[in-house]
Every structure is written in structure tokens, then in C-alpha cells.
Amino acid sequence: MDELDSALLRLLQQDGRRTNRDLAEKLGIAPSTCLERVRALRERGALLGFHAEVDLTALNRGLQAMIAVRVRPPTRAVIEQFQDFVARMPEVLSVFVLTGTDDFLIHVAVRDADHLHSVVLDKLTERQELADVRTSVVYGHLRKNVIEPM
Amino acid sequence: MDELDSALLRLLQQDGRRTNRDLAEKLGIAPSTCLERVRALRERGALLGFHAEVDLTALNRGLQAMIAVRVRPPTRAVIEQFQDFVARMPEVLSVFVLTGTDDFLIHVAVRDADHLHSVVLDKLTERQELADVRTSVVYGHLRKNVIEPM
DNA sequence: CACCATTACCGAACATAATTCGGCTGCCGG
DNA sequence: CCGGCAGCCGAATTATGTTCGGTAATGGTG
Image 1 (spheres, rainbow over the protein chains, first blue to last red):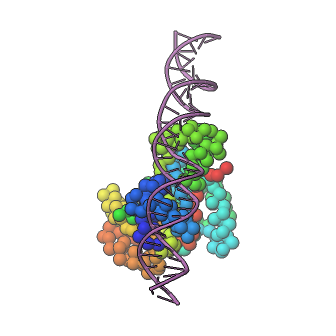
Image 2 (image 1 turned 45 degrees about the vertical axis):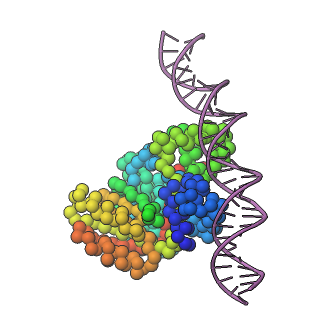
Image 3 (image 1 turned 90 degrees about the horizontal axis):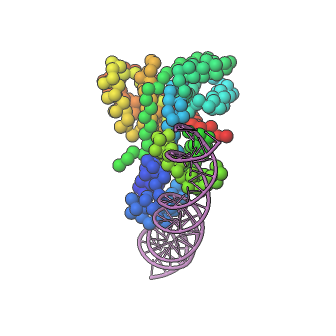
């Protein structure tokens, strides 16, 4: 994991569709070398994959919320079962499993306030193991690249 | 935004490096048509970009935490200034601006517990506007694709 | 119902890029 | 000093992206 590798990861994070030639040129190495480097990063597991970023508004899911949840009892079985359930909900963007007062943070993207309401009341609150729910609307969500630009 | 478009977004979300030919074949359309569709999605802003996913452990930042923050006073000026500050911290993965009791949720990835400690005590707590901080360690973080697989 | 205009689609030709591979270089251990 | 190894390179090959003119489908209009 030298300087070249992190430069590659940084560039591919900013734009995962940069061509191999482009990358090679920016780093001052041959395309074949660059290809080999990227392949090695994938094999080592440092580079997990490439994903398109989709605009939520374009999908009619412009309203985001963060739902803090406590389950009871907080045993492994209950936590895993609840996590599985939440992961299957189409409104869910991501699930954080936490220490502390809350057991979960659920990041959701929904159509509108009614939709959010129904997600919380009709889907989540139906669960027996759910002990506490607190919903916050997300005004803004800034996502950074893991490796800082130079 | 028809069925073809969302199929494209779904596939590109799973793997942003699928070749155009590949996509076209899977959808049963010509490569040139597929290319035009993807271009249209980008121009419309539905498809925002492509990004590499990097393994945090490989970067020696295997410990994640969620930091809930309240600032005082919660005016626009203070909130924007704090957000700018947080966004510049290299440990930060993403920042959620919230309604509710907490003003921010800060998702960080750090080397170890000492690093986390220093982020909270040496960097965050230094800020005058900071009224309240609660840190939770993240055991697991499941990220889903926005569009469900079929 | 016929007409036109518009849009989406296709396939072939062309341009660009990915990938392979044999060989070269420099570094390390013996 | 000298194998042996790992990383790198560049040219040849293969695959892919991209453009563009033509064609079929669509939808609105007289």
C-alpha cells in the first residue's frame, strides 16, 4: 500500500469511470502497470467495487430521515432478526448497528412526509421487539471521499 | 424514467463498471441505444456519478463511530460554520444535518479507540459552539442499493 | 383518418481503450 | 559477484466506446 496505490484509490473514488490510460497518465506510469496495480488492489480487498450514485429526487424519494431505534431485549438473536427485517425494507438506505443508548440508526429515503409516517408507524412499530423509536428529518447529507483530495 | 432507465440504474449501482455492451445485452437493446440512455440519465441528473468503494480496514481506519452533536445557538450561521469545520476533518465519512434534539450526526472512521478519543476530545470539544456530544461505536454498517435488485 | 414532426432505436464504421505477454531493469539475499 | 524475484514497460491483440445516417414507432393535428 504505497503512495501510488492510495493515489489510485483517491482518483477512482472521485470518478470510478476514469479510464485506465487516464489514471496511468496522471500517475506517470504505463497503462499496463496501472492495470496490474488496480487488479492487485481488488485482489487484496482494498478496492471493494464500483457503484453508480443515483439522485434520490429523481426517484421520487427526496425526503430523508434518520430513525434511532432501541430493541428489547438487546440480545444477539433479537438484534440480528431486527436487522434482517430492516434491511429488507425498500425505503432503507443504510443501517448502522450501534453501541450506546440506541441499538440502530436507520437511514431512509421516502417520497414525502406521509410516506415517512407510514414507514415508522405501519412497518417499524408493528415489530414486537421494538422498544423505542425517534425519527429525525435529514436536511442535508454530505458524503466525503474516504481518501482526501490532494 | 421508464422501466429501462431504472433497470440501468439498478445494474450500474451493483457494478458501476459493467460495460455498455454488457448492459445492452442484459436489457435486450443495442449498445448504441444503451449508451444514449445512460448519457440521458447523466444529463437529467438522475445518475450523479461513479465511485470506487474502498475498504476502510485496508486504510487502517477499521473503527467507525457515530457522533451526535448539538450546537448552540442553533442559528443558520453557527450550523453552517460548524458543518464546514466538520467536513474538513479527514476522519469524517459523512455528515447528516438533522432536525430534532441533535443538530448533526457525524460518521467517522478512525484507526483505533485512541484515535476516536482524540477526535472527539481534541478536535470537536475545542469548538465553542458545541453544546453536547454523544459518541456511539458502530458495530456494523449495512449499505443498500437505492434501487432493489429484482 | 391521413399527415407530419418528433422521438427512440438500430447496426455498421470508426476511434479509443483494455488486456496480454515477453522481455528488461533494479533490488535483495546468499 | 551472481542468481532469483518483483515490478515495470511497450507493442500487439482483443474488446469496448462512440458516432452517425437511416428506419420504424409514436403522438399530436388538421
